[in-house]
Length: 383
Image (cartoon, rainbow, N blue to C red; front, top):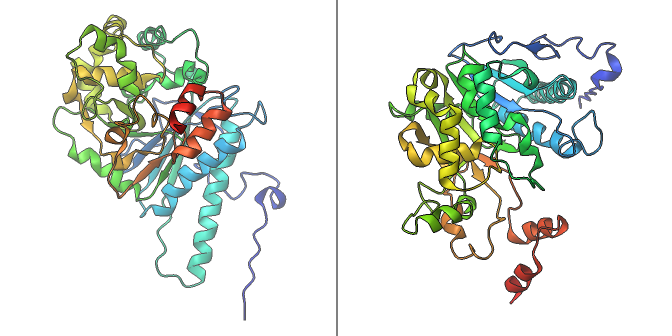
C-alpha cells in the first residue's frame, strides 16, 4: 500500500499568506536594529543583505528579485537549514521597505519546503533526519542605518574613492556595501555576528563556521578569509611602482581579503580604541590614498588596506569557509601565478559562487557575452 501525500501551494488554500505561520517567520515588519528579537549568545546570528538594486538583481520586475537572485537566496538558506543540527538561528535581513515583501516571501517558502520535506522523510521512517532549527527573523531597513552622523561620514569618506566609471560594478555605489565596519554600532546588543553574501552554499553545519570564533587570538576582532585571486595584486600596481621592493599583493598573507563570509566580534570592536579610530574620515582618506587604487568592492577594499597595516586585528579565516569559484583572473598576466592565489585544499565547508567559473571555458564565455573579453587576450590564449 502506498501513501500519496499532496502538498497544495499555501497561496491557494490560505486566505492570508501568513496564516499558520509563526510571526517570527512570516512578517514584513521592520525591526529597530537596536532592539532585535534576540541578542542571546546561545543563538547563531546571521546577517544577509536582500535588497532590490536597480538594474542588478531585478531584471524581470522593478518590484521583485529576478530568478537568479531568488535562486541564490534559496540555495544559501536551504543549505544552512539542511545541514543544521538544531542550533537556533537568528536571520538578520538587511533590506528596505520596497524589498521586504519579496524577501519575506522567498524565505517563508523555503522554510515551509524544508519543514514539509523533513516531515515526509520522518514519516517514511528515515532515521538520519536532522533537527529543524528554530529560526527568528528580523528585517532591518537599510535606508535607516546608520543613524549616527559620524558613521554616515565614514561611508561618504569611503565612497569618495569610487571611480567615475563603475561599469559592471555599479551596485557597489549602494551604501549597503559599506556597513560592515559599523556593525558594532548598528547592532549594539549583539556580541557576535556572521555576515554572508547571498551567493553562498553551505556543505557543513553552520556551527562549524561559528566555532571559528573560538580560535580568535586576544587581539582579533574580525575573521575573514583571503581573496583567492590576484585582484589586489592588480589594484596595487601603482603602489608597487611607488615602492618597487614591496611584496604587497603577492600570494600569501597580503593577497587581500574576500568579505563573502565575515565573523564579527562586535563586543571587541566596540571596546577597541584602534578600530574606532580607523573609522574617522581622515584615517579613511589616509589608508585609501596610501595604496593608490579606487574602491570597486565596497568595504572589502578598506578591510584589505587596514589589514596590510593592522594584521593583528584580523583572524585568518581558512579558505575552506569561503572557497571562491571565480577564475576570471586565470589569464595573462596572471596565468602562471593564478593557482598560487586560488588553491584551497578540500574539504570545502562554504562555496562562494562569485565572479565566473568554476572552469576557464565557462568564465571566458561569460566575459565574452558581457563584452569584457579583450580580443588580444583571446588570441594570446589560443596561441
